[in-house]
Image 1 (cartoon, rainbow, N blue to C red):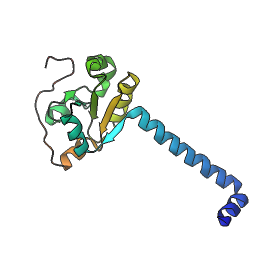
Image 2 (cartoon, rainbow, N blue to C red):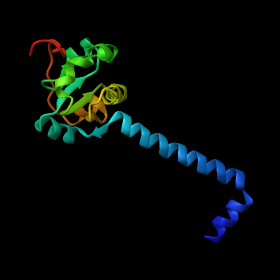
Image 3 (cartoon, rainbow, N blue to C red):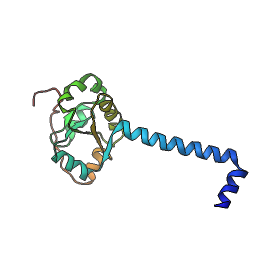
Image 4 (cartoon, helix red, strand yellow):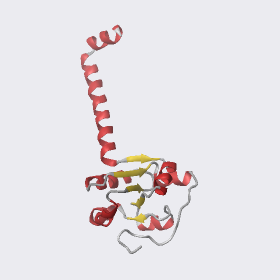
Length: 149
């Protein structure tokens, strides 16, 4: 402990920079999790779906039609702000957002949280992780949010 105190005393600028960098990383991580939602592994996502979570796939229509989680609804990220109202009846329920690799779904989850959706989760690793776990996919025509089910 004395060595740490001596190091901080001898290198105040470096110590201050390290403290600021750590505070920024911690702050960004906390803020990012609160805004985006929770990351669920494919196994946890299956449990959430079985418990009634709806799945919103934010990939483009052609990618969605090539393979998507069974009963998922296609709402491309580019259309989400205009069509988010179609999800209002699920505002108090669980929503699982997915994309190809888990990167795009963060923005979609943030939009949902901004609109007051409380139980928003993202598929960690996206459909790539889903495929790696050999979980079932459905292919075919996109079932879009707002279309009659």
